[in-house]
Image (tube, rainbow, N blue to C red; front, top):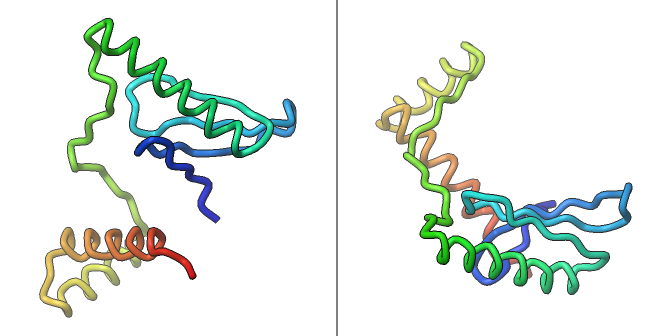
Length: 117
């Protein structure tokens, strides 16, 4: 189960905190903290909108770029036998190791984002 909630075009991770008997949301694409809490999902969406608006307003006022920027690079460490298997499969499809892994990741994300009936 994906615990991602989309609020005004921004994705937030949602977790339940039993200590305070509430849901907690945290936006993923922001440079700073804009978390929010509520006892149910409708209230969580409302609180998320408020938190997001407040954060973006402060960034605008202070001239801060509000969004995380990604370089498109990250290091991935895998066991040697898995590395060998991935390299073999990439070669069998006529792809570089990089392109093979990109394709796998894109397929996974598309599958998870596909609408359910």
